[in-house]
Length: 480
Image 1 (tube, helix red, strand yellow):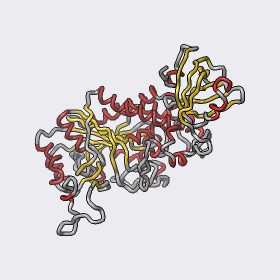
Image 2 (image 1 turned 60 degrees about the vertical axis):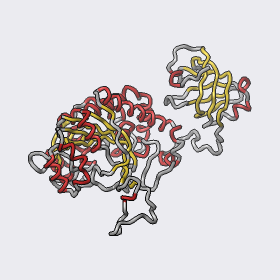
Image 3 (image 1 turned 90 degrees about the vertical axis):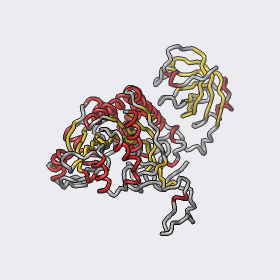
Image 4 (image 1 turned 180 degrees about the vertical axis):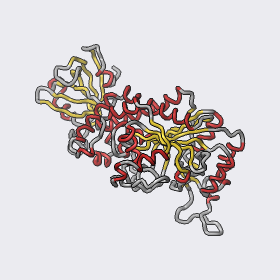
């Protein structure tokens, strides 16, 4: 008999039928007359109850059915005699596939802290919390591909190994096969990368944007979705050294077109989560509500998890310039009373998360798109505005986290682009391939980037970015 997933059994309407189910034991309770086993196979946040008679199954076999063990159950799906579930399984035969010594298995049926679970990240997907998180991560990944595919975009595969630094930040992981203790040197004593595997200095990519522009300026509309790497020594709840980025690039899009697409995209993702992840979201929402009960009032979440998602879906995003935002923030009570950790000191201030959240949560009470930032705090590839001081950039701000999307209209004018590169010390010879797209058939184009883990923090309500990716890579930590 073929195995049936638990998620299907929980939805079944036909009862008193023979079934076969496999999974991992969450709990076992009972007495010498009957055992109740909660079984979960990862397909749902909900487990199914197995009712086992020791006289039928065997007392010795049931001793091996402990929390964490994997078992195979043959029996009948029947209406549940107890509360809490509609159906249960009356076991006729149980096979123990893999035992889990209860003296050693670290995930016994009790509440574990997220900090403890990070130490056993190889086992944490078996918990309810992380099962829910990773099912939602799958759903959001699928939704990303569905959105762009349905709009006629092409999925563009960028290289992970690159010779360019898209952000000009220099915080990159070097890729080399040279002997680190005795590398070949040039006459002036520098490492001779011409003898390296690729014949030049190479790194892991920090962004697929520049290569994505090449695709957009040939195929029209593309998107990338893959891992990126930052060698930034930031041990915070908001930073990872390896994370996933979604980066669409679109030919013939101006800044307004770019904002329209990004708003539609984010609203689609939030609605998809509401439509397809209801049980997992309900579990995580209850978890957050229980956590808030023990927090001071000022630290509690202003909205429930589903309310946050509906907040994005149901509100058109407010659009204003960086200059207008600075005026609002400068005149705000928190700024005047010194409540901001980082005071807003006028035009040119690089906005922090607390400023962005004030605009979203207190002032406008809706998602916000800021545009036209000072050129000095933005990247070289953003299109210069006519005022010569600002660029056609846009950031989208969400409740709870601040910036979730950053993008811009790209600079398509060769002379302006090379001038900006010179200002920022970026050698033209290193970017000749990129400049060719401006020399031959240049066209207005735009794009944006969405950090997938930043999205996951918003959708799941988790506060630490290390909890929304299966294997977090951070300074000093590369386990598994």
